[in-house]
Each structure stands twice: as C-alpha cells, then as structure tokens.
Length: 102
Image 1 (cartoon, rainbow, N blue to C red):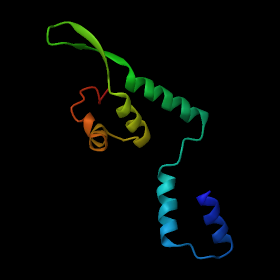
Image 2: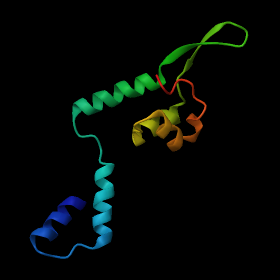
Image 3: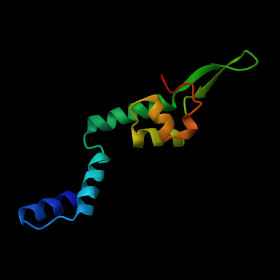
C-alpha cells in the first residue's frame, strides 16, 4: 500500500516527505515472502532449526534435544541473520548455542 501511495505521488509530481521515503526503504528490507518456493524454504529452515540432535549428557548417556528453542527459531526466521555471529547479536539467548553453526 505504501509503495502504491509513493508511486502515485511520483506520477503526480507531489513531494514525498523524507520520513515516508525512509519508511518505504525500511519496509522493503522486511517485506514478506511472496512465492510458494520461499514459503517451502522457510518451512524447511524451521524444521532444521527445531530438529532434535543427539547430545552426550554428563552421565555419558546420549539424549536428543532441539537445536534451539521455539522463540529463538521464530526470531531467526524473521530476522534471517547471514552468519552465526550475527544471529548471536540479534538473539542473545543463542550466544552459548553449540548447534548454531550446523
């Protein structure tokens, strides 16, 4: 909607306020996924983040645990960090997560 307003103002030679330009720029960075392929990739990424991995417990037994918590997975999927270091900065609870690199 914001893009349509901006386009209409440009066509009609109406001045676009600086705040609106900044908002349009910000919104473009965080636009929702459009294609079914992107949706499928996000679903696969979510499953990968929440999959259970085998970990050796202190008593030597092997237990399965999730790679991250639900809220961490949601934050990672929304923010889409490019590197493990960026993920740790954006989601502080991921700082000590040994499964982040996988």
